[in-house]
Amino acid sequence: MTTIQRVSPSRRFKDRLVQSLVYLSFAIAVVPLVAVLWMVIKNGLARFDLEFLTHSMRNIGATDAGGGAYHAIVGTLEQVLLASVISVPIGLLTAIYLVEYGQGTRLSRAISFFVDVMTGIPSVVSGLFILAFWILVLGFSFSGFAGALALSILMMPTVVRSAEEMLLLVPNDLREASYALGVPKWRTITKVVLPTSFSGIATGVMLAIARVAGETAPLLLTVFFTDSINTDPFSGPQMGLPLFVFDQATRPTDTAIDRAWAGALTLILIVMLLNLAARLIGWWRSPAKGR
Image 1 (cartoon, rainbow, N blue to C red):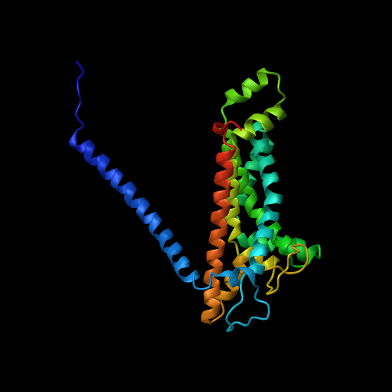
Image 2: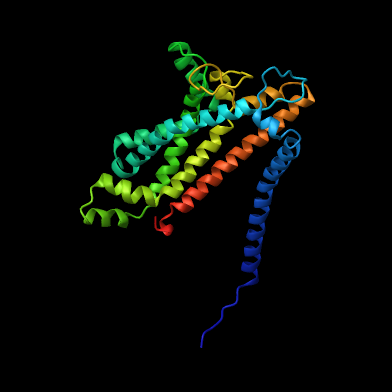
């Protein structure tokens, strides 16, 4: 006959107290987020229309109605895409080296140290570096590519750390089973380790993209301002959504402020769509799907 042990009132009280504190902390953390989202949606819907998404600010004054952020949307998408093309392969290869090849070596410890240092670098420092080296020393002009270089500096440490953590979660039994079949290490990494951790790596990449998509300081120093549509990120100034929001918010007119709110709402929607795409890709490529 089993003996049922009753939980003492003091333990039950402590459990309820800790549970209540957890719920309270969650509510405190969510309230500012919901408030910001509500404010952006409420104020941004006033100018979030087809004209705003398909027109630029060319020949539109600060007090004029109309205009849109099409040129800024194009610039942000191109700059973030270029930054991802630069930083994701470098960050992923660095994480593979740290986990699969360089564990315990002096070089891996040095790389980990500098990755940690880069994680805490203010965003304006990356913009200053590209401004000093790429524009002033090498003589290149302001461009979307210069902004992408600055954003890639901010993306790399996030990609490295997230990919490293996901690779470490892959069980060693999978690697050893592959080695036992005579599969080379490089093929084990590409066919076993990376597919197993693909979902987590994709999520980490999206987190890195979400971090840099709203950065303004690096773009202020490397991209410059323009009201015209520039689809070539390698030539001439190119607007970005963070710059568009900053520019419109500093103009003391209601029409400009409305455009700034609409630009902020557009930026949030782009980040949400990118995260949704990452979730769908991770679900489709998960090992449980058998692909």
